[in-house]
Length: 136
Image 1: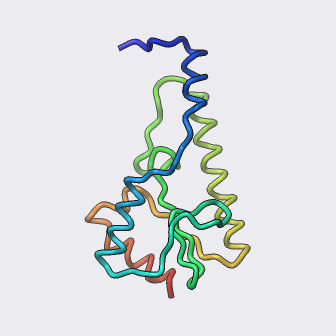
Image 2: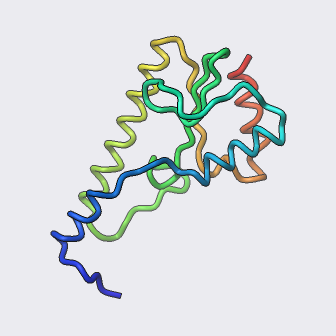
Image 3: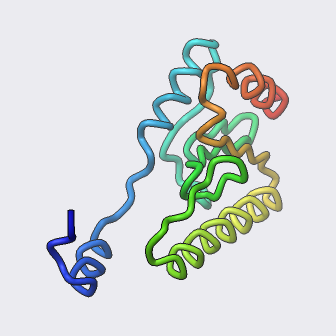
C-alpha cells in the first residue's frame, strides 16, 4: 500500500514520535528476573544513559538492546528504502551505546548489554550466568 503522505509530511509526522522504551523486552527480562529469584533491581533510575534495569548495591546497569535498533551482528536487518538515513541513524545509535558504556564504566559501574535475542528461552541460561557474574 502506498503512503498517503508525501515524504516531507511523513518525515514531519515521524519526527513527533518519541520513544518510551521497548516495554516488551524489558517486561520479558523482568519476568526472567522473577522466575529466577533475582532481586534488588529497579527501573527508571536517574542514571546517565537511562539503563533499563539498575542494581544499585552491586552498581550494575543493564540495557536491553533491540537487534534492529542497536545493530545486532547476528540479527540486524537493513531497511531497503532510505538506506543512507538508516545507515547513519544506526551508526549514531551504536556510537551512543559505546559512549554511555564507557562513561558508566569510568564512574565505576558494571554495564551489561543484553541483546533482544538473549531473552529467548534457549539463551536464558547463558544470560543468567552473565548476570550472576556481573552481580558478584
